[in-house]
Length: 312
Image (cartoon, rainbow, N blue to C red):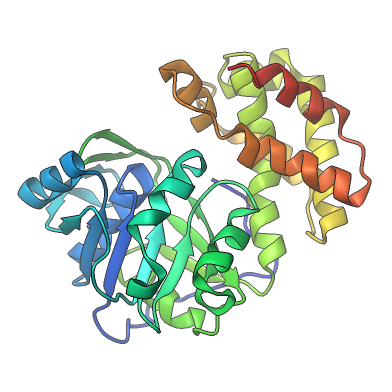
């Protein structure tokens, strides 16, 4: 989840997708699996890319979604371990910790001359990685606001009453067409003018939430009360770094968002730590510190938390 970029304009639900698209989804987990199911239900052809066992499960049983927003349904999808034909769109929805290995499943030569890549990852540095691999004009930037979890291969529990995406980027492809496809699947979509604003709006919200809930192994309710001063300081530091990068961030708005969350809400990084999985610490905290150094903005609280979490 993230705040809305200030220059974003909403794609109206009345916009009709130009035609059914062929969409590859790299990483059919909580986010990728939900989008794959929604796009398939909307009439688009969907190819999920995953390991052998997951691909076999998806081919046999499809993707089952349990959602308060979209209801309960099962969507049929194709599945493979590697992309073997051109597609209109490739949604990249893996964890940043597995990005490099996962990209082997999408050879640039196979993607196709007109294939668009849409990463929905945490952090701000991954668009550069993808552009170096697939070309500057092939990669859009995107952030998604959703709470969705893969509880088993092909089984998705969607907990939030919303599913929203902001788009921006240097792609030569008209992003309004991509927005229309996402809207056709029920995903509220905005096209923004500033990639920096879109990516930093998410990071400025996510980094304090992830770092503090993981460091103290505590849900947001405990963090915003028991660690309030540290939260205020950290939000201030990261807001300053983002502003130096050119993003119009508002610390008070970020704090107000935390105060509206259910007290028991946990960050995905905290859940990864609890499960013994690799943390996206470098993609989130590391990205903040590299930007702070680049722009000469002090971020001592962020640096301390990243250092304390590094052994996990």
